Image 1 (cartoon, rainbow, N blue to C red):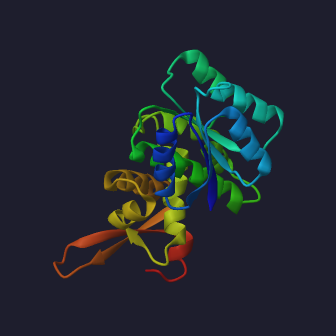
Image 2 (tube, one colour):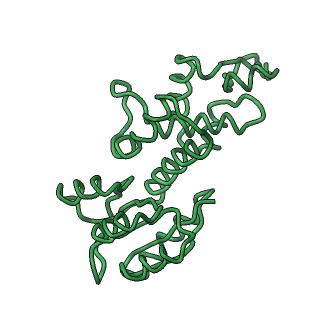
Image 3 (cartoon, one colour):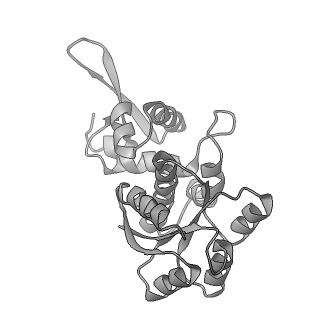
Length: 231
């Protein structure tokens, strides 16, 4: 379970954001804070993995708080939420290691996508002692991949690729694209696009399942899963 500190000076917005976080599987709200001082105290108490951090706080900006946390070497990750879009703030966020930058107002699906991207990268790091280049690209490409839409010409998002892989890895059988989409919390078209690319790269194997109507349905599984007799 990933414990989240929700920070916003507006009490109502903090409650809404906390409710959003609580709706995403694998995440829970550990605390709420409405000033940078309260947020720092919560981090110092421990038990915080991720901060959903507003930029404009009464006592100092969110970015100044992030800078302070980095100087103190607190092991927490940060997703900024702000109405500010100026380039200076974005540059500072990147410099301080902010993982994602979400512009207010945002919808639940937008936040969910950022949280799932974060969870995919965190899971990748937790599951492996050493990473191959694909895994490293997923980790260090997390901010860029989440900030830009996926296109065929620019390639696919590393964190989303790992999310699809993890969904297949946790399944006890090959899954259809529809099942992958439901379990991963992505659209069916996104699941199909990533599954096709993974199949092309050889990481996923395609099998056909014939139903009563005689039309085959595509099912996908990691090669390690299929090798154990899934076909």
